[in-house]
Length: 261
Ligand SMILES: [Zn+2]
Figure: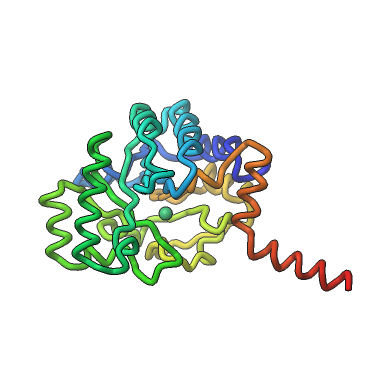
């Protein structure tokens, strides 16, 4: 089956549902003091194309699965009707913040901008957890705002956020699988939004991942998916494919060019 389509995503969800009796949103996970022995957390970064997220949310809702969607505050992503609709299906909406990279590392302005956007979201839906946007082209790591203890205290105690999911969760014994790089090689992704886990797993293809999820899944798992990469629409599929593989495509074209000369 072709991977990175809603059909293949649905198949992964079936496998997850058969292996995990507890599928939690991040707010539910962070809220409870006693963590279950086995759980799966499904997390989405809505970096662009909010309508793709809506379709994914519908597939999950059909299967009785609730996930967490981290939305950026950018005008092309902050789509109020889509945010409301996804939330109404029982999914959690979180804020995918990038305040420090937005303000070129200015801590004061970043904090102010963060609070402004948080309020903007909260006029639409409740926000209980946050997740940084990796901002791969920026020299600033957006998490750094909260490394200052007084800022972290402000986040939790004053702003009522249950946690920043990179900083406030210990991933050491949680398997973390993500579609970053449009493949399932977790050890290959060396970008910022990677977590420190002892359990790094690589899958050669979607079938291998499916079998793992269906038959031999570890008891604690995070499944991180970027909905903009997943589509059943054929032109969209190939556009995504080439966006994600732009470097490989360029290399391939250079190779062809070299061969024809
Ligand atoms: Zn992101």
